[in-house]
Length: 200
Image 1 (spheres, rainbow, N blue to C red):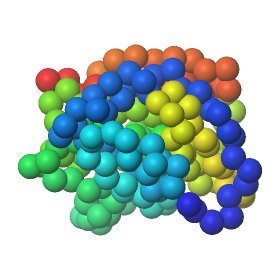
Image 2: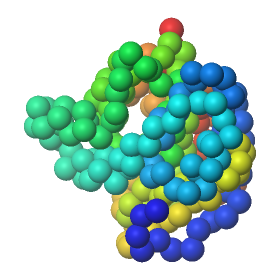
Image 3: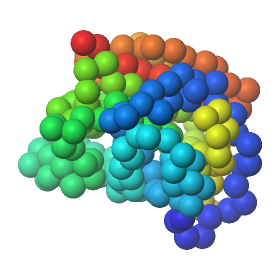
């Protein structure tokens, strides 16, 4: 778990994760979690038959977003290191958590471009987007998975930062070509939950 975290938001409910986790018990199914490997999340996956990868790259990608636009070569190398891609063993689900709140559109295009070769046909991406306040936490919150529909969200200390965009479903499809909206739900906490799918 990341250091210096404030008290968590316990019992954050997810309406779309059960759908995203539909293949969790299938042999060979795979999940790429961009967050850290917390003890609760590892325990959650222990009872499944899927392959799980933890990139723990949320802060690194958010730091990249602060420096955007970047030199194209540097951006390519940074994304390569932040996103574990193995085309011979493609991911079926990618958990973005709150990362979409931090990336400007041009970076989101490079992000999905890097990720695409490592995704299986029809792979899903799950994440949240703020639709309320103009600011987001200084660092991307860390999530623990307690159950298929319940999460624990840890928000670190520090002054909030300006969200580059309030991405609508239309914006997400614009900046992530080849990705379509599978499901979307507006939450009572002024955030929208998205389940996206790789077209084809």
